[in-house]
Length: 157
Image (cartoon, rainbow, N blue to C red):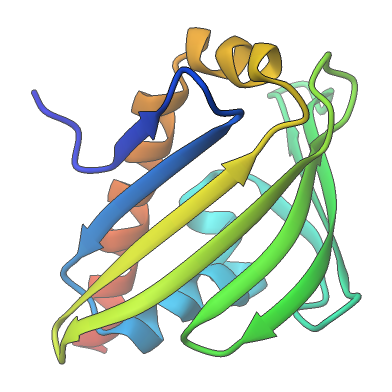
């Protein structure tokens, strides 16, 4: 089955370009990234902190069934334009990955559809390639599927 979220890379660059069209108005797509409760639901993690403002910070954490932390991520928000863009760093703690820079651009296609374009810049091409060896593309596509399902329910309320 073809993934709805597209992950593209150019061998000569140390970045990933990710695109996805959603059957959601742009304000709901943006809300899914900027509201802690919603973000945690579709990402499948706990949002411990989210200051969605310039120089704000965030922290995510996932625990297994016994309460052991299995994933932690932190970052700084560098810029926010509601319904248009979030610029942030993203760092997975206790992993070999260096922090990355992320540009999330939100665009309205029409009143019922929107597009997310993400540019993720890694410190090196090797770090980018290491990410691509993981089930990154299928993981982000599944998360975006959950996002769309969750936010469609918001439309129905």
